[in-house]
Image 1: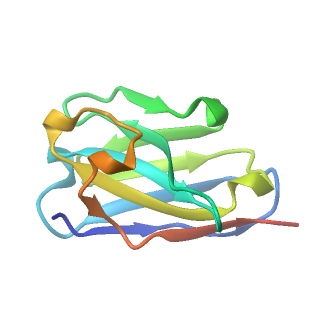
Image 2 (image 1 turned 90 degrees about the vertical axis):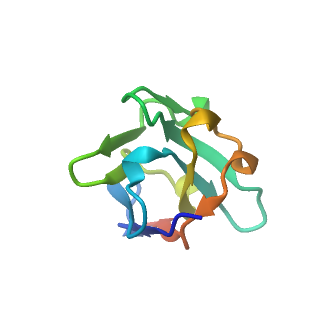
Image 3 (image 1 turned 30 degrees about the vertical axis):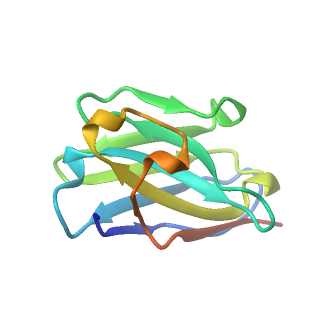
Length: 125
C-alpha cells in the first residue's frame, strides 16, 4: 500500500474555495491512478473526482461538475482537488486514494487499496 497524506482542509464560508493536496512519501504518486472521495457523517463514501496515471484526463462526479477540479503535478508528485463555490453540502472528510494504473480512473472506492487519513472540510457561515 502507498502511504498518502492529505492537507488543505478547514472551515470555509459558503462561496469560498479550497485546494486540497494529496502527497506521498512512498513510491511516486505519479505512477498511480488517484482519486478523491468524501464522506459526510452518516453517509456512504462517494467518489468526487479521479485523474488518470498515464495522462491528465479526469472524471468528476456529475453533481459537482463545474465546481470541483482535479489536477496532478508530476513535478511535485502531488494531486490537487480544487473546490470552488463551496456549499454546506460539501462538508465532509475528504480522502485521497491511489490504485495501480490498470485500475483506470474510477470513482468506486472498492477499486482503491491505498488511502490517506482524510482532511476535514467544513462549510459554514
